Amino acid sequence: MPSLARGLSMPSTLVTLRARRRARGVRSSRLTIAVGVVLVVVVAPCLLAQLTSPFDPTALSSTRFAGPSAHHLFGTDELGRDLFSRVLYGGRLTVLIAAGATAIAMALGAVWGMVAAFGRGLVDEVLMRIADASMAIPQILFAIVFVAAFGANAVRLSVIVGVLLTPTTARLVRGAALVELQSDYFAAAVAYGAPRYRLLLREVFPNLRAPFAVQAAINAANAVILEAALSFVGLGIQPPRASLGSLVRQGYDQIYQSWTYVLFPTLVIFVTIWMLTLLADQLSGGREFRGATGG
Amino acid sequence: MLVAVSILIFVVLRLLPGDPIITRLGATPGVDPETIRQLRKTAGLDDPLAVQYFRWVGGVLHGDFGQSYFNQYSVGTLIAQSLPATLQLTAVSMVLSIILAVPLGIVAALRPRRLLDRLISTGAAAGLALPQFLVGIILILIFAVRLRWLPARGAVPFSTSPAEHFEHLLLPSLTLAIAATPLLLRFLRSSMVDVLGATYIRTAEGKGASRLRVVLGHALRNAMIPTLTMLGLIVGYTLGGVVIIEYIFGLPGLGSLAVRSVFNRDYAVLQSVTLLISAMFILTSLAVDLLYGVLDPRLRVARAHA
Image (cartoon, rainbow over all chains, first blue to last red; front, side):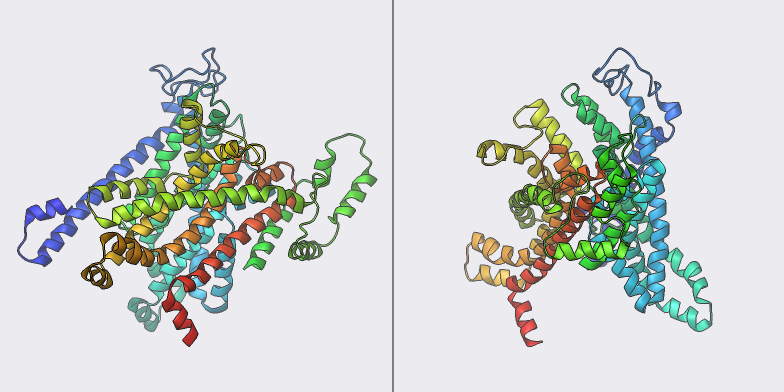
């Protein structure tokens, strides 16, 4: 940061600039690590819910609506179940849905975007108009329409969310791929006689890793939001199964009995999304990007 | 564009499993199969898909949204009942977010990279990560449940009690405003920083114009132009958020209508609501493009000469 760069007081402006850039790189990589650590701390216990949860998430007890305590870290719910354990198990489902959705969006989006960039002309036009049309419908509304059409369980939910995140991903991949296709190395390789599909897989695709990573983080954040929003409205994961979204819903219904009930799952969702957004921000080198825009 | 959107919505909704007529009659045993067939026929559900599609779109163009599959109201009536609440909520939250974003953006841009700017920018970055419905829940938690200052749910018609009407509107619109403000703020700040560095600002200062006049008269006016594009996007973002926010706060708008129609398998309503909200979004973007020319005389001249 500036303070560090000023302390170095290099004679030439060029060196100062370089030092400043280096100092900035150090700071941002530290932040990236911190963000990564927080993400792991939130996500890993969820994935290992069987090991980490202190109670059976479905075990009833007589202590209903208990506040947070050393015994029940997040308190208990309307049936006396341990909320901490429920958040871990619910978190696991949400993480799995979001991961599935992100994988689907990245895979479909990559194919869609690359075909558009590679096909040019009419193919490109048609594929991108479809993407534009689907992006004009607010995501959450589109999600509701899809859930109405196909119903919701964990697998369908991640497919639906994945498909919804595909058009934006396709747009980004197309843009990045077009840049690559215009590059000198690509022209050289074509002139050299390498088959084009091979170039696409061997040369262009690996070069898209950076924008891909950014998009994956944004997609994951949006997937968490969409799952939570759908389950909250009652169109996603249904009781007795629980996800973070459905836990927020149940807590919201009991908001006058226990205000901590709704707070904890909400905070877990917020921290997860915040970290994913920060991660995307870091990976894109601090450039402006459109943040998560789900429900 | 709208045509593509309408086809998309229609096709997806026709894939719906479950028969709306059977849902409407309920699982009453002993319903005459003949009655079901008759009802399907009157609802036009037996016609080919293309016919159904053109009947729907043709009707919409004439302001006729068709008949709800679930109750006896026409879709138009249901939408007319819900639209005002949604429009009002969107409008109030846009105004609120402008009220929040513009002063903060200006203050942050006046002394870039100083403490105040850092605070505002960091806050905005964190705010970007907050999804709208979580903001809503947190606001309810604070202002309705803990402090008990404001009502959590429901709506009161303006005619019954104007004061209570706005009391019920405050939290939901504040929610949407808080979610929209960071986007607007960040954009306004960076374009203000750019503009304040321009030579015409130095000229204006050199002429002896007061600081206030330079910032508000010269800089803000020019910085608002690119920010306007952002505003179009934000209206779209807010329109999407309205769906869940209305549901959380129990407001009788289009969003609640959409959610209810899913539970009722009433896709006559769902498809028209979805189309309407998408149309509002597309038209907003169009309006923003047109406003661009009005606000920036350079674009107007360029077009006139082209």
